[in-house]
Image (tube, rainbow, N blue to C red; front, side, top):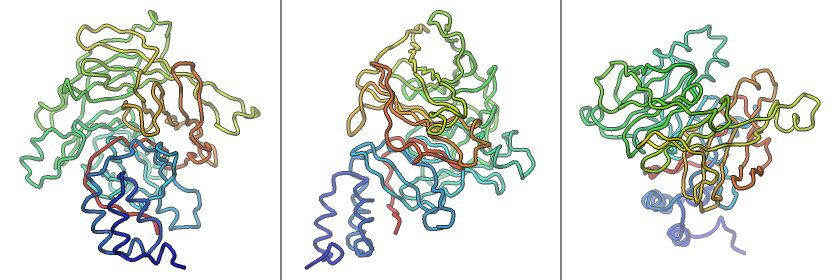
Length: 407
């Protein structure tokens, strides 16, 4: 009787050509070693896989805690909303490195020489970024790296894909920027820059950043929901940018006296969406504490800011959109392919309560339904518990890249 591993290359080619989704290429190459070793089949996959539609967004889970298994630690698990499937991908470049994500890419940092890189988790393509010396939170005793590395909280791009041209003039003059929040410092770089450029001009703590693709502006949210903007594309190299205050959320008008946690994202052609997050806290003897840790999400509220007239309004429905929040750039996408409409998909992006827990944290992951305020689990919360890099959402991208899967 013929087994799957004994199929002829000609049959494998026929199967590969019938794959309907980008991520199915990963599944195909993960079946067995003989399927991966078929040079013709692999070449066919690489040639046409980037033309396939994607099941993104997907959730990259926390690192495995099986420290004795080096091969296992070189892999990361991905949760695909479409079909609620788990897939494992070889990704040694992210091993024990803090990560944040945007547009399907990871921004990873390393203790050695304050390095920073863009990493595509499916192709393992890496792009060097300037060293992080500008961010003053990094000046610490090396023994404290485990704590201070957690200060990297947000990253956004000003265009969906990095510019891979080798022409320095095109690269530096293009529209691609990487913007990050590290602690209480905000900065950006272009590919090819030798250092990061500082952005100044806000008051209080930084909550979130987003780039509005229609307005071509960077928007920053700080304490009490104060919104700032700047034209990040038209500036002189290595000169600090200064934000311009645009609006402040009228909390009293909506019954929100404080904003302990909030997110900001592009919402249509002429508006921004601010989302507040309320958490409930547990004592150590509570049953919920065992599952979630010190807290879990209680509710979200959504408020729209019109960029035309500066007016705020509360919205109670996301319509046919799904929103994704966590250690990633906040984003919305049309529901479908496993994504439920009028829902907020969230992960745990609150480091501090878990620093002293031996197993880490991150159990506060789920799907919030706007219409009734209910929360459902996506999977066993222990799958997302982390000590190093937390679970984070990967946004849709159309990059051409080679697939690398675990053996």
